Image (tube, rainbow, N blue to C red; front, top):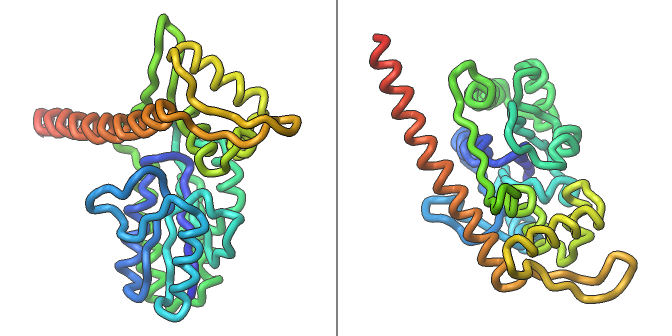
Length: 266
């Protein structure tokens, strides 16, 4: 079974869209998504929040599927993938490890790549010519979405108080990292920042929010394990749900605006 890892520089680059397009081209396949929170209606059926459970499921597919498409940044470097695809972005709040993920990819979708490089990356899979051609066409459509000349709405959401940033995408990723690794040091390492930096960010947020976000056990130079408090988890899940709704609704309003403008110019 061939394992395809689909990664991205940030949310909203179309990882799920590309995964579904590839699964349509290669029907003897399974789709897996490793994410946070709960599975949303209509989302990928094989949805996991735990890394070990996702890997166990993938291992069980060995004799059942020819291809396994996995939407996950977390699994890069943790599973042996036959091909890693990275979807870059033109701006916005890129992941702190985006450049690292990009460097590990076999195929990159952005304005600087071309079909010859994509074909070279796909050669490792020994696909037939027609299948390769169809996949490259799917890459081309996804690239047009990412870097096309059309107007694009960029949405960034954060909470502030008295003119100071309280909570945003960076802290949300840090808290998710604590959930995954069970420690602040592990989450800080994934974000590419020092333990001291991460601890300072959380302490400032707690002071401005008026409640604690994490609890930590003593031990070691950088502390022991860490977990989210009940309020910290509620804040994180609420922020992520609010962010999804804001992006969805703002995109809809933006498209309506473009439609009006295009209608007036016809």
